Amino acid sequence: MSKATETNNARPKLPVGKILTRTIKMLWEFYPVLLPVALLATVVQAIMQSLPSVFLERILSIISNYIDSGDWSSAEGLVFQNVALLATFYVLGLLANIVSTQGMAIVTQGALQKWRSKMFSHMQDLPIRYFDTHLNGDIMSYYTNDIDAMRQMIGMSLPQLLFTSVVIISVIFIMFYYSALMALVILFGASLMALATKNLGGKSAKNFVKTQKTTADVEGHIQEIMNGEKVVKVFSHEPETIESFDKINDELMVVSRNANLYANTLMPILNNMGNIMYVIVAIVSGVFIALNIQNISISGLPFTIAVAVPFLNMTRQFSTQINQISGQINSVVMGVAGANRVF
Image 1 (cartoon, helix red, strand yellow):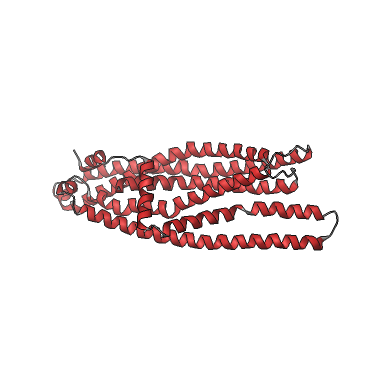
Image 2: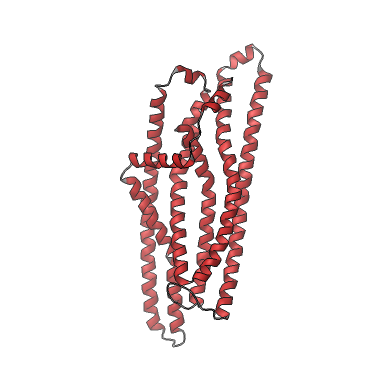
């Protein structure tokens, strides 16, 4: 049996939930104070990001109340108060963003350094048989490809998913606060976008996992051939070596092509679905206002232009966040695959 075959057969696969739980648990052990602070800052930033729609409704309501009387001097004070409050929230969001990004940068790089040290220390205790049955390039890929995939997942994907989740939850609450009917229209369109993400993103994710494994095989093969180049030439084994390399290199090309094919197709589809949903919300809002349909909401406000316009903004915000989730799925999948190999 070849080294590569033994390596692939000997490597167990852990459940995705267990891998993520173990990753977060170890991050928490490494940084018990900094990690919660960085994550809390991410949540605060997400909440600040969700508030503009509320202020848009309030300012439009102020303008509509004073448009008939023409008493703009009274309206200016209220508008200024809301704008100043919104600017304060933006500053808080900016500060939270600085704390979050700087904190996660320290957590990510520090955790990867600790993981590399732990992995290197653990390898010192492995029997010689392990190194005899594993390709050198495959072993090195733990420290390069797999650790880099974990860096992408920890430093960008997981914080972005947390940020996106909080924004979506906040926007959903705001939508139901103003109009349950319009909220249901947006959620129906969002469910179609989520379905497209699940189907295309799932196919892309499977191929990204295969890409991670096949890349390690290619690196292992190259390392082995380069180290044994003299032996290959002495025994005139060049044609067989080229043939074996072409086989695994072609396999890497196929899985990488399929992974990027689905990933590159998903984003334009979601963008167009978001544009269609925007138009539908605009039409439905106009119909509700024209027919004077009774609004069902937590706020008890009637359905007016002041309520309809923020919904257009929230529609764009909602579709953008779904696009963000779809863009991070592959990074999480590759990070999980890398963490599985490391663990």
